[in-house]
Image 1 (tube, rainbow, N blue to C red):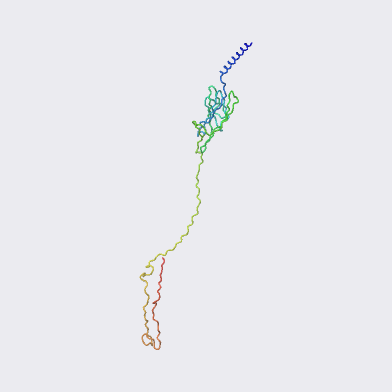
Image 2 (cartoon, rainbow, N blue to C red):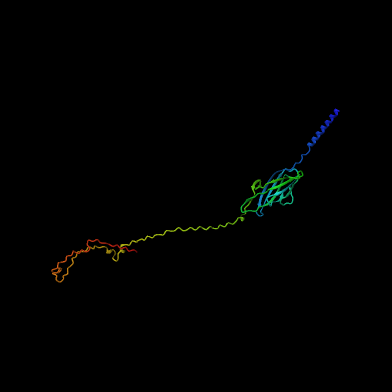
Length: 272
């Protein structure tokens, strides 16, 4: 009995050992794909059409077929125009919602869509934002899927470098500025004080200060020479120059004229 029990125990151990070895040789179970990265890329602008063109990239850990539904592709007016292989998108070009698929195998690990967005030009250049984007990722292992949201961004990778999403200026849209001259404020003139003219008496040479004769009729001495008046004889006189008889002679002081008196000169100024 004991010997038979031992035989059964050894047989069971051998069966379990072989079962463990067989299980270890089974392939690993496939796992759900995970989004490992995202980016906005290759922003450019066409002034003729007024459209900006850019790309949105999703990097995933893809092990089997995935379905992506873009429920939001912003800003307003954005349209998905293309998708890079190996992914496929239905009904392009179109706005959201957009359904895209990646198969595995061979599949891939990148989903890249191209988007156009209208941006009107302005008088001056402007930096614009692209996005946001909302995507629902589902598969046979996760039929309901899970939602990922990606915000907007004013920068994009261009040649591996982040640069602003710039819309160039359109100078034709700038308003025309007319420079209207501003009239000058009149300034009252400064009053000029009246000029007082002082009359100038011209110098008149002496030759023109006297009537005919001029300087030749200069001052002369007026001292008279005493002259004794001659007595005129009358009837009854006793002789020439004598008083009549019986009459006392009339005595007079000698006539000297204006001798000894100061002489006054009159200076005549003729104003021209």
